[in-house]
Every structure is written in structure tokens, then in C-alpha cells.
Image (tube, rainbow, N blue to C red; front, side):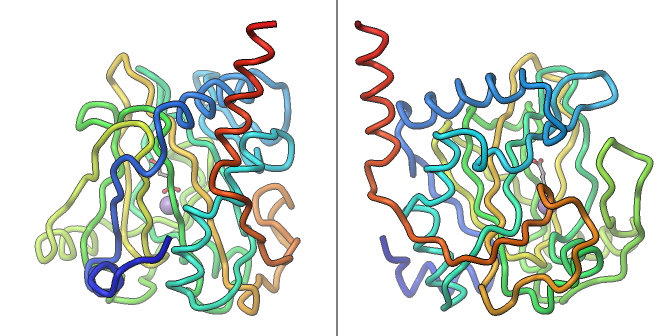
Length: 267
Ligand code: SIN
Ligand code: MN
């Protein structure tokens, strides 16, 4: 699945692209059911909010078959390879819960800021591609993007180890205000199965989820192979050291699993 020249130009200009209905509701439902199982596991990779509900499950592609297949899905890998113009490896993989009522904030940040400072990733030749497993609405803590903010490069940031259970390099309010006054703030919303890809220097955040509706989103952080991290400071399940290029699977790899599950339920 190739991005058009118009989509490539828009990604370069705005810093993100949103694809509604990129996955079917069967595919999204399968992954949502698997996410519930993963959050129930007692594993170090499952990070919890201070209330105890799951915040994120790291590296789910290494211990769950459905998430493993999603990590090699051509509808996610191909567009990123096209943009980075190189084979990619999985730098980080997380299934963010943003649980109903209890899902906490993600502060204003740039992903590359953390990857560069913590992991010594040399260049912003990496990016996130995210899959909505729940419907994302203005009410359940959607991602907020400042369009075109990636054009400002990597901005100064402070290491916030207090606001949530997950340390993050976050931007000052003055910088966020200036950027948002210039570029506005956009929140891509849509049904489960939608996909959003964004430049690793795009400034983004998400508010707490006060609604009774969950907002599960899976993030593949894909990095050009030659741009692999140089420092192994964070846990392996947070910043991976396997720089093997990802070989995309067949487009129906998740639907095969859906069919297998339906067969086993029927028998
Ligand atoms: C992130 O920026 O890494 C996660 C944001 C979110 O899931 O709301
Ligand atoms: Mn981020």
C-alpha cells in the first residue's frame, strides 16, 4: 500500500497523517480482546497508573501472537519504510490503555527527544504509527498534535519523573504556548481501526480520560536500521536492541487469526 505524492507532501508539511478505517472492525476487535488479556498479566512490561489500572503494555509483540503479527503488518510497515526510505526495526512497541475514568495524562513532548536523550538514537529517522483499538472521541483522551511543530527540530525539554508512572522528557509551557498559537492543536478522532502516523519531532500530548469509555491505542515506534540506538540504558523491553529489519507479513495475517479464533469458539 503506497502513499500518494500528495500524502507524502502533507506528511512533510503537517507532520502527521490520519487514515480512518485502515483496519476492519474484526481486526480491531481481535486486538482489543488481546489487549484485555495482556493487561491482566502480571509482567514487568505492563506499567500501571498510580490507581493500579494498566497504563501501557510494552513489547506486547514479543509475548502475544496477535500483537506480534500487527508488528509486521504491511499496512503499518510499508508506509513508514516509504517515508524513511530504508528498512526499519522495532525500537519500541506499546499498547496504551488510557482506561475509562482512570487513564492519566501524557504530557507535551516529542518522541525523538526521549529516544535521543535516553537511547542515543542519532537522528529523527524514526516515527510512530498508531492503531486505534477503541473509538477515539474528543471525550476519551485523544492524541493532541501541534501541526507543523516538527519543523522546529528537537526542542529543549526537562525530564519529568513525577507527573505519571512513566518518565518522559517534556516541553515547557512557554514553548507549547508559542507553538500552539502559531499552529493550533488538532485531535484526530475516529472509529476503532483508524491509524495515525506522525513525525518523531511532532509535539503531542493527551489529556486524562475522564469518560466511561476506554481509549486503547497501539504504537509501533519504527526506526531506520542504520539509525539504531547507541546506548542501552533503558530496559530492553522499553528500548529494543534487536535491529533486524522487519519483513512484512501478508495483508490478511490478522484475519487468519480471527478465522482461527472463530473456528475454535465454534468447536
Ligand atoms: C505517547 O505519546 O507516547 C502516548 C500518548 C497517548 O497514548 O496518549
Ligand atoms: Mn509520544
